[in-house]
Amino acid sequence: MARIQTPVSIETSPTAAQPFREAVKKELGVVPNLPMTTTWNIDHSHSGVHFTVRHLMVSKVRGAFTKWSGTLELDDADITKSRVDISIDAASVETGEAKRDEHLRSPDFFEVGRFPHLTFKSTKVERKSSDTLAVTGELTIRDVTRTVVLAVEEGGRVKDPWGGTRTGYSASAQISRKDFGLTWNALLEAGGVAVGDKIEIGIEIEAIAPAATAAA
Image (cartoon, rainbow, N blue to C red; front, side):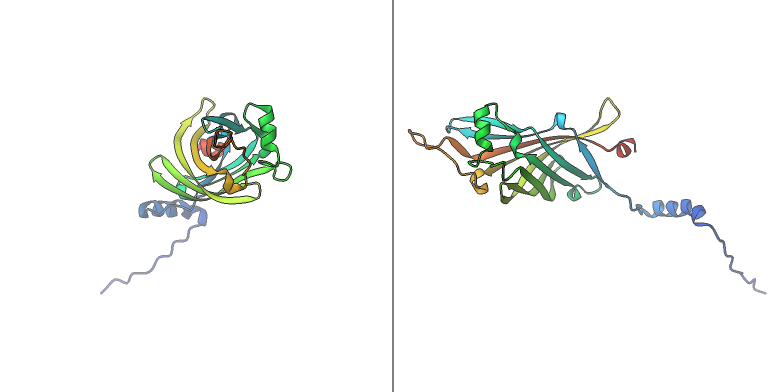
């Protein structure tokens, strides 16, 4: 006579079954849905926003913005889902010459009374090589917004002496100031102009991982 198999029902609580479910997920290669994007804290003492422009067509003047803020969101699983936003205090422009800085703050250039901030908001991040990225975003100067692509070099990650995790990025781009309505100039007697049109932008960012991420 054939033996009749009786189904056996085993009940487990959700808590007791959790280790089993996680083991199955691991065996099948299923990764739990975890938040991969983290907001890193920018270390302003080791970061900066700089620019360079030609003067009298023969030399370069370098300047910086000393007051700015930014948000850096990094997705370790998919870098293309990362994001960066930067807001710059236009009145904080410094070139090492007080009269020139006042001129840059005037309506001839940034007109800081009407347009107090310059902003950059990323819209796309692309991986170009093992340590380089192309970050496309909207750059707004005065009341003009243009699409700009930053060439970004990754500096890697390191543990700092205080137990934190740090990362660094160097970004560069070249823009035409005339594209943003910055058209003031002075003609030279021998030909040419006082201020070049092409502006070289440089951004250095050193950022610290949130405490929970650094400890993980």
